[in-house]
Image 1 (tube, rainbow, N blue to C red):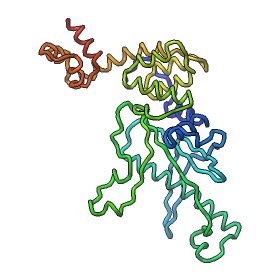
Image 2: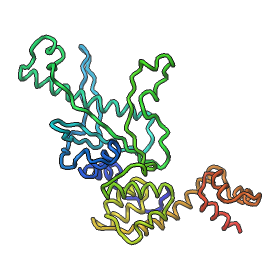
Image 3: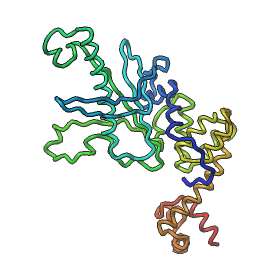
Image 4: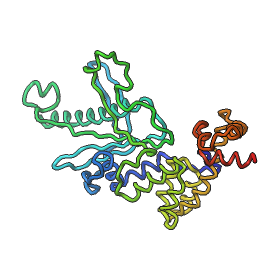
Length: 319
């Protein structure tokens, strides 16, 4: 989206990391995506975990350092044990994301493996040569690593969603090639998820409707109510709107009115559509010519990748 507001120095990535560090929001995200809104993961049972999964892998006399840092990582009690929950914030389509997710999960397992092996060595727990060779005792088990990738882009994710999507596998070998699927959620297509946390619900709902230019739906809900400025800051970061971010920052921890920002977004959306149209060679003359040939604004908008309001604005200017 085009934004003529003055640029601030706040990094969107930092805003999103801080938002998801809150246990209630983090738990609600995972519950909505993995368990259809059921309260399986409890906020009170979440603990901060190390986001740095980097490690050194040794192969005989050769060693390699592998580096991977997740955006947010939490340990969650699950019965008498726990699982590791990781979050990746992604604002652009990444065509190697399944491999990145797999690498992060793998390094999480390797890191725990090395910690257990070191403890076994220190405590002399190995009972035989097999346990000595692996570093693990027969009863040792690693903890599950579950990572979710949240994609904040306005356009649809057109990248791979599993490891095999990245591979060129002959048909006869498909059954022997191991796959690794990623847990992907797109903000633009998130209405199917049931978020119970009001902050998470507002962020996804407002951002999604801004992407769709459905400002009326936002006004209907938030016309007579303000939202926390922190939530406004997150929405501004997701939709890349300096106007919303600046308004949120001015509140200094207070609350803000979304309707004021929406009026600016409407103007930005119209300007952006016309500018993109010109860049693609979709001049005002072509819009007018098609209209004069009897094509309705809705059809013109569909054919030219514009909104109906953008087409109507051009027609109004050409009268």
